[in-house]
Image (cartoon, rainbow, N blue to C red):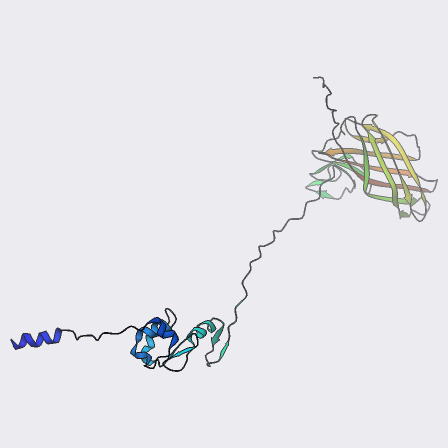
Length: 304
């Protein structure tokens, strides 16, 4: 059947020619004289794995292995593959060194620590001003919602003593507390001229004994018109924490109080001091200290 014979000839594939493999040693020791295109396996072996070199076998005239030329001019493919890691080609065809951007190092944000709130003094001094209103209450009744006046004044500009709400009025028992001067105001007044000269205080001390229920205080008053010592002793009242001079020095009066908040003890008092018939001094002082509860020695039996 002619039609079947013709169809059989069209479907039957042509016979492939056998290809002789080239030994690996021949690739290294002897250059090839045949075109590289005649042996596609050679081109694949010579090129880098996965590169496009083997796919261009029909256009390649020679391959170099480690500097050895195979069938034509050396192309040095291995060296080129290394160079591409450190160079780039611009749009204009210029080969330049590749610039590697520096690694981005993220620095963790420094936490912002809020500024500490100044601790409120258990006791402080202030000045009475009947025209001033704080939190809807005049200073004649209460300085603020945080403090209550315990020694109030009735004339403008007079010193008052105030205790922090919630602070204890009583120092720990069986303890003597030595206070340190914090802040103050002092003036030397001239009764003849009516002038007041600001003064500084040095060598200030205040000691309060809850054992003897007493206190003693003193400081040096320094001003351009007078310099001298001011001393006073008095009583400490445990129930209300009040400090009052005992009158042993008739020139000096002291009125104040103590207060305790935790381990912090505070004191404040106002004073007057008659220097001579013309000069006098007055002012107010704030003090701070540490009030620790009495310790009990090891082995002591506490009666209950």
